[in-house]
Image 1 (cartoon, rainbow, N blue to C red):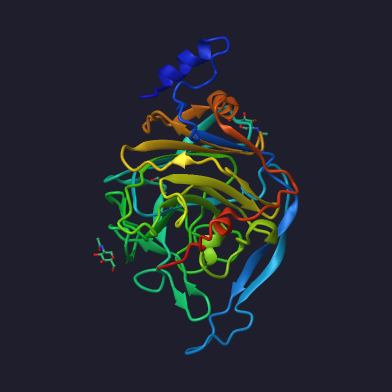
Image 2: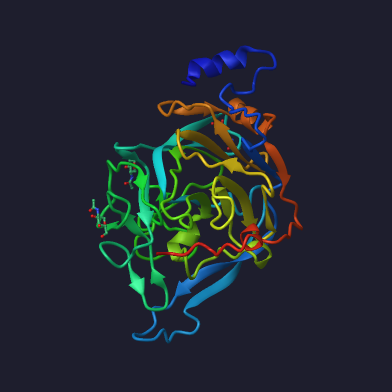
Length: 359
Ligand SMILES: *[C@@H]1O[C@H](CO)[C@@H](O)[C@H](O)[C@H]1NC(C)=O
Ligand SMILES: *[C@@H]1O[C@H](CO)[C@@H](O)[C@H](O)[C@H]1NC(C)=O
Ligand SMILES: *[C@@H]1O[C@H](CO)[C@@H](O)[C@H](O)[C@H]1NC(C)=O
């Protein structure tokens, strides 16, 4: 495993800052993608209120109240709180989040973690089944977040631990910190079961596999969203927007596109600036062995990097900034500039794929 000892050894070499655990493949498939120039100045439609409406028809108009939110600076809007969402079929094995105390801090410390079958540390599994055992449902606004139950296919009254990590086909979960919007105020509108995401710079390390689907139209995906999206309604009233229509931030980390090439997974980034992504290149869908990916959101360098790692020691509780820079500077990743005028067709529509929907 990559240990701090190995990291220190790396630091001793004159030009040896490149971490030793970056996956290299020679088959032409992606092992990494690096988005530069991520941040920008602009605005998205922040949700300010949701009106419940009246049974049996949704009579509220508008039921989704929004107003423009101006943001700017490095990584904006991805410097806001982020959640990571998962759609099955997936086996999730390990999750760890590392964050610096501030954007230039010398060390990124582990702030959240979980291993399959084990306890959660500052991490809560949610889904969009509010109105049952937790969260809420309204005629105009649909379902809020709920705590995911132990088999990730229903809701629970409180956060669950000890889950196996198996996410069934078509089911979705997302992770949040254990701090609720009642503990301290959340930005944007929130309702029901609502928690904070991870703000500022963050490294998220994930170990998982994406087993074959029994129905080829049910495909797995891992994506990051501005946490405001799920606190309102991931499939309804939210600030997501898409591409040039403006948005508060979505990063498709590994997304298998139904009706396209279901053996591969693409990456895309969306904000109020537009959209860009991996284009014709793709990561191989890891149907068999577990894979480990690191996703770095770095405010200081205004960069997001998604990289496959050969290994990760999830017990390590700190990562030096120099190693983060080693990942950001490493060769092998596809470089994509998210320029201020990025505008292009949504790859999902190119492939005739439908937008994700809630089951
Ligand atoms: C960032 O955090 C470090 C401690 O990790 C501290 O020494 C430094 O002063 C902080 N910088 C700013 C700008 O707050
Ligand atoms: C969140 O989890 C951490 C680590 O498990 C714990 O120390 C903290 O008290 C928890 N906070 C809340 C609000 O539950
Ligand atoms: C989770 O919810 C689903 C749907 O209601 C149910 O079938 C399943 O048994 C639940 N799992 C647990 C562990 O309660």
